[in-house]
Length: 502
Image 1 (tube, rainbow, N blue to C red):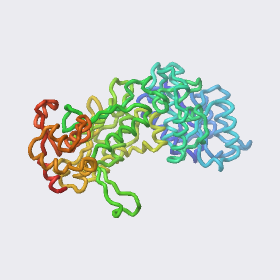
Image 2 (image 1 turned 45 degrees about the horizontal axis):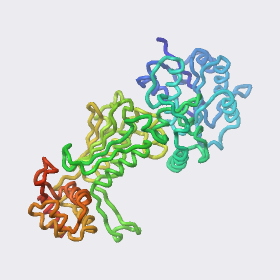
Image 3 (image 1 turned 45 degrees about the vertical axis):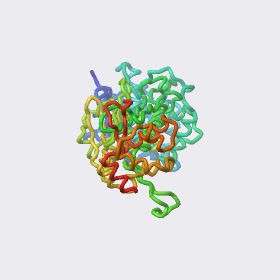
Image 4 (image 1 turned 180 degrees about the vertical axis):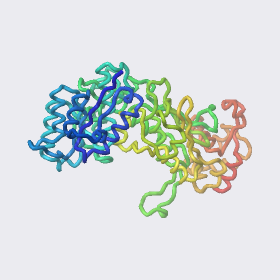
């Protein structure tokens, strides 16, 4: 099959880096590389023909004219016209497909003739804006995939760029889109004004096409009820008492909503259940009380964000967050991009999101760093905490393992080692006396009556289960948690912690 030729046009001195990035990206991408080839200024060998003749000839031979416009107008010929404008005019004259991407930055310094060229383009075709190379790559990716679909070179689209639902603007939350713009402007200098319409935002993010169709990504990012369209787009969070998957479960939660909602909910699920060291105001320079989590919050959030961004949304599986006594595991149904291995995740590598139209909005709001350092950051943050180095595994699913402190290490900590006891004792004043008695096994009823509590369900959920989850207390019959003969007693680590606390 003859490849589709793309002529990439721009003022040479303004977009050299962006041209090189696009040329390499299109060639290397598993999908785009099969269909497209690019022509760049830099590819022209020395010859007798003038550069302008060569470029116009390339426009005529190409199928797609891809223009990068910014603030510079560039060299002007005897008639005051730049090569870039000549190339655009030739593409328009020949009715070539024209994809125009305009850099939205420092626009007050835009050359008057460049502004006039952009205005001319806007009268002819729909154009896209970008701020940086990553945003440009995402927009070009979406445009070329849609070109292939419209020309029927392919009858399948990547999930994030596809239109698998009949969703309309009415299915999206306008308030969430407004909040997105506000946050994105604050975090990354997003170019759209706060009062921009939903249609303008979605078009800018390549989440809506010229026919007004809403992409899958738009539903996941801004939908009122995303799971109505994509049932498995959820994050399942579960906590286990020990280091293996077994019941009973002290906590279980299914996070639903938009991708932003699920990330926030899942991160909170983990951070609410790991050790928290609370200092005093005297230790800090401000009026706030210093806190120190057992696991670095940024590492936990990064692992969850990566799972949401890179997962295979066509899979029947879902993202799973599992908190064990000795580790946190984050699973997602998906595979590493072609050419990227587990070992490469531990060193500098390119950012190659499986769902770039999902990654881009998460970047704007500060959830994602596009330079490919996320997996390295997780490792470095954990090492700074003195934790064992995290692990990455690619099996049927992709899995991240973040190690917690061992029970022995927890026993050595102060005050985080007894933080759970201190917290519980605020509502159960006789808790310390109870724990002293638990050198010998006690039934749940005996424990509850000793503490003067009447509600069995409340006491089990809010006192016994947290003590077991922290490794302070264990069961006489762990294999049958609901046994009528079940009793509870202090572990050896629990004894050390309680002795130190008291």
